[in-house]
Image 1 (cartoon, rainbow, N blue to C red):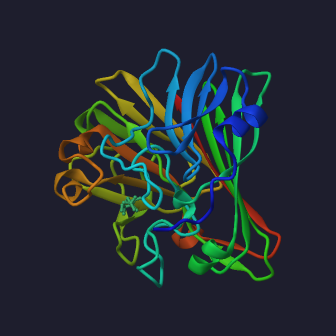
Image 2: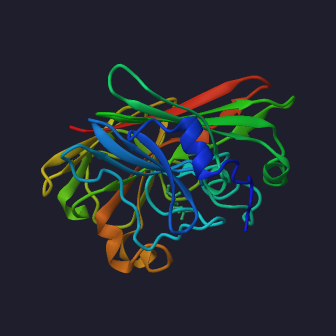
Length: 307
Ligand code: TA6
């Protein structure tokens, strides 16, 4: 188990210092995780301080936008399945040491609150931070400061920024691994990926190119599109809605669904539930990995809205 950072403040102290009336409150869930509940005129959202993990985003009068597995464990040491896991400071397996946690340790760490606010547009913003420490250095020997900014309104904006606070350069890969709630896989198509080249799964070279204007999912997919910085739109016929997924600071887009057989090997997704989500992820990886010299920063963002 990786206990990377301690819970810094009690629920009472968090509400006292950072609560904003009924718009933003802190609660402990039944598993002992600290949740931030945000509710304003435009939307509701839930964020876990464990992992700085957005668990839910629901615009007013809309269905839930993010998918959260009903089989997810909500325990320290295990990543939460669904919502928006943060992959940092590496995406996928560690490049040299497979014993290190997949997708890095950001999703396994307790993050601290640094600010909360409302703006004139009625949006509510939560800022969380994570600083390197002796435990993170056992896994990755660099000094960094990371900040996650979640803004909840008619759109959900999630920005992950990280700075090299040490004296040696480092290279990272990362992702905002968003799981989207859909009626069923056969009802969706994804626009925005045509003519882009992709790695299929873990292949060494990106040998595939998407010719079809729309991507439909009828088997396991694990596509990593390179040189892609544009918008994707997930059209869901049955629910008569589209989810727009825009991004900044990312040139790799990942589309993942494990389909039937692989889902059976994943302990925290019920066998039948793979049809209810699709991952469309903003990433920095491959030719878009990020190298930061001392004092340099990078930001990757995803902007999600029902259209
Ligand atoms: O983004 C796709 C992917 O990297 C897949 O290869 C699959 O493993 C998925 O993420 C989930 O990873 P996780 O470590 O959360 O089980």
